Length: 317
Image (tube, rainbow, N blue to C red; front, side, top):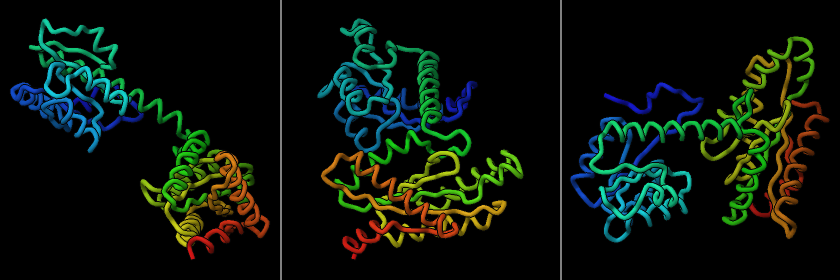
């Protein structure tokens, strides 16, 4: 049995694929569906463009294989709609000979490839392999652009983008948004005494603790730079955020930390009449102030910025 996921060319990150097959001919849907099932990729079928878009709204596919001439919504319009709403989706067009659209037409509309009926399944498999290989390459490059090379956490560049998105969403939907800033105490002596390899090991261990101590698919952890890390915590009250921060601190104490501890600062996002980026600067600055207060008090502690405490008392009761 062929498995297109087991391609000979491997990438650092392999994307999970799913396919929608669109055709008004039940026989074609059956044949192509049977072929895709045999190559171990999840798929759904739609009898026209309208039904395909409904399926995409429910759970969008990474690849769409579509006919051109169909009732209610033809393939060309479907291509344009998909590329407008889900621009990263790849589309392979299949159509009979002598139709009104050329290879150039469908590629210009946004399709990734074109195959004529009746087609050889070896040809379809080859086209799918190429599309999946290119998707995996794009996914790998994207991952490398937003990840820190040492810890595999999100990097500072992605933090700035994600924080802006989360702040806009939190303000629009009316829920709290907190920032946790984590800094290693006494980290420089580790590098001086034990070497940078041991220091890197500590940074990687801390990264794992940040991931394991926070809510999956809700909170986001980042390497802010050097030995500083930050977390975006949405949809939680101050007490819950303090519990997360204390969990991180306590879990870190249980590792081989070479005498290092954590200073942790917490701030809360507040929207004002200023530009959003000014409010985000304030959010980061306040978390930084709280973290440095923790250091001034000897480290190994969590400090909440006074503005976060005031806001939480006012809005959360």
